[in-house]
Amino acid sequence: MTYQTVPYRYGDEIFAIETDRLRLSVYRRSAYKKVTDYLVRNRDFHKQFSQPQPDTYFTYAAQKEYLDCDLRSYRRGNLVPLWITLKEDNSKIIGRVSLFNIARGGMMLAQLGYHMDKEYTGQGIMTEAVNAACELMFEVMQLHRIEAFILPENLKSIALIKRCGFEYEGTRYSYMNINGKFRDHTVYYRLRP
Image (tube, rainbow, N blue to C red; front, side, top):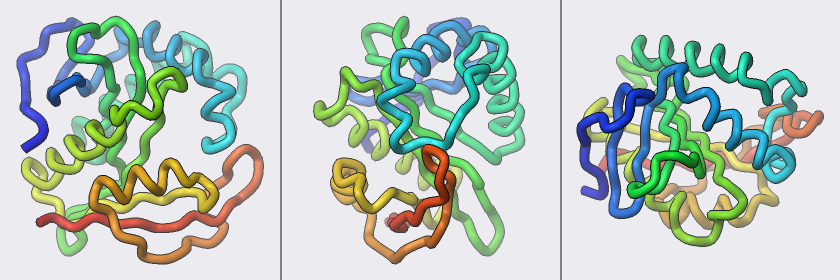
């Protein structure tokens, strides 16, 4: 096991797990300042691999609403939005791992998305976070399958997902609007052991 559920230490958390180096937290609206700071700080870095966002997305008001929406979806069991900080310093967000479109019944699957602070890439942090998030979903939610959709040219992300035990499945054509254009994505999956 690469994670452990831990007590809430901070008023803006409603759930948290820790790994060797990281704290992954589901936040309430009160975390809007550090979420906005992270998104603004990494706006240009994320742009090449992200959905287009209007300028208003990068404001306190918008992030309060997004955090409220995330929390409602989390409570319904449709989303697990894990914001990443270093375990020893919860003041600065350095990434996010989200498990969304959670389906139960005959499917028992979720889709995985993630993004990282430009200053913390190449340190194995996202590998640690993705592995912990997947284990949480397999063990606690008893999911059978987790899927990731990645732009074919995003070789670093493909290498990351393979390190986390994901297997290549195929191509999802014209899957998502990235930086203003609908783009094909390669599909990777990981099954519950």
